Image (cartoon, rainbow, N blue to C red; front, side):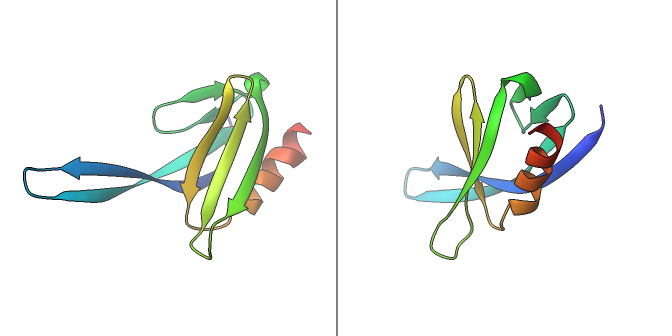
Length: 93
């Protein structure tokens, strides 16, 4: 299992108490290995991954999309994942 690339992403969790609602930003990392893609709670065999894409959102980072045969999974990123996507495409396309 050799690591090809990794990129940080964030997960926004909403907490509601009796008087207020607030958001917690959790920092996580998506890992690209030669046989799988791994996130905090999911693991995708590389044979199920069809592509990655990225959409910028108003100079605040953007969304990294993981395209699989099960569907598309979005991940919020604060910095451009172009190097991550390029590594995937160079290795698997």
